[in-house]
Picture 1 (cartoon, rainbow, N blue to C red):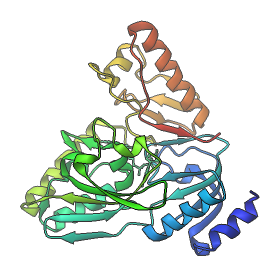
Picture 2: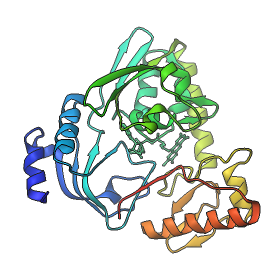
Picture 3: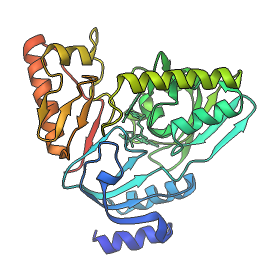
Length: 302
Ligand SMILES: Cc1cc2nc3c(=O)[nH]c(=O)nc-3n(C[C@H](O)[C@H](O)[C@H](O)COP(=O)(O)OP(=O)(O)OC[C@H]3O[C@@H](n4cnc5c(N)ncnc54)[C@H](O)[C@@H]3O)c2cc1C
């Protein structure tokens, strides 16, 4: 389908402000790399989101869902098709000890809303820079906390364009995994079940964890957080350090000096620099230690 026709199609459900043509993905991802997406759309309600998906499916237009782009590496030539960005679907509501958030709400904003409502349980998430949708899909976690421990249910849009509410027991959540990864489904809303707590103690815990992050992680550089998943029985950062990669540079990409588990965009890296550096690390560790280093970061586009 031609670009103008895709634009006309999308304009039937979205306003002009929600449609971006030839959008540079380096402006939309925390790695700050990536060429243009043919089209990027930002529906501001779950209903519009499902209308957009329905239209794209009906017309066979390639598309990809993104949240805050903090776990995404987009190729230098960009993405051919439509990127559906959830960031404008960001309402957060409270119901007793529950917080219900739309997929595009940032995890840190939901954690802050919990604190403001004297609800504890989400302190671990206040430094995770992704959206709730992205976090639910991969069961994001930090500092002994995991999304699955506070999740009550998630609502997903299924392949038939129907909405399914899945209680956490049915979400198959494990290390960086959920049922959404096994199906062509998209997270629309998430409900967290929290406990009453002291707002000052909650804030103090969030401040302490965020200070630990600043001390240990190279937050001053663009990155997508931990580049690799934790291989069973090992720590990715330790394997990378032991392989001699601390500070190793490839083009503008570098293994962080501060935290070897992070590949950073040290100086105007291209997606190719980053992909090649990842491959160099994977090959060496496979050869030396026999360990498969699977990426946590998701690579899309050309
Ligand atoms: C500095 C830094 C620190 C980080 N620290 C942590 C950490 O402590 N713990 C941790 O777990 N992660 C961490 N991350 C990684 C990242 O923030 C998480 O993986 C986060 O959950 C990704 O959310 P996102 O909205 O940015 O997803 P995106 O990067 O936009 O997308 C990631 C994947 O999720 C899918 N996706 C996004 N939204 C939806 C949806 N609504 N429905 C279906 N699929 C969807 C996308 O298709 C893609 O496959 C860190 C990243 C950075 C840059």
